[in-house]
Length: 197
Image (cartoon, rainbow, N blue to C red; front, side, top):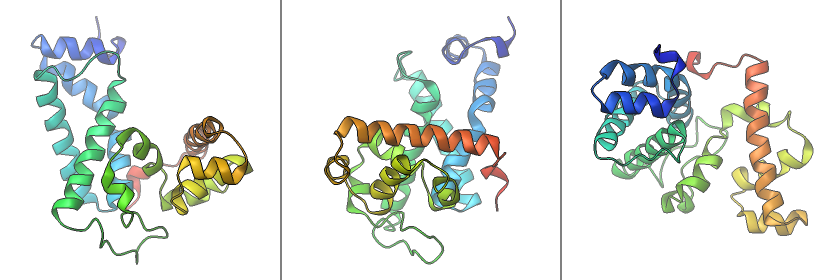
């Protein structure tokens, strides 16, 4: 069977069974999405490339250690690994509290909440960055409001729910749809973050 007909988990099984080409195919399938995310956060191509390589080294080690289960989506798992490595980098270089905001519209790493690393929650928030502000402005009002309050004003979903008079689940749902819509707008407008310098 040709590799492009296999899903991610089937490729992983083939790789663990000794077919190294399967892993190469799997990385190529998701590399643009993973690299785009890293680059959006660190805003430095060389650093992004280093973290990207470290991400897949950790992926390979984790696969061999049996730390991936088919219940999780492979690409989401890889993104969490990348996210953790970015956090580790800023902690080690002591930039977490002191990153200059001069080059960015939004202060990315000056929140103490960021270092608490609730990955599932933070990954959603940290996919929205200042580069995407123009796309955020195209969102429906309710979705844009949740993104602005959560990301730009660093409010919890509980606080957002209280301020906007909705349930926490509604606030979370609006954030989820906002991210879906941003991805759709990016595809429609052929926004390619990889080619940005």
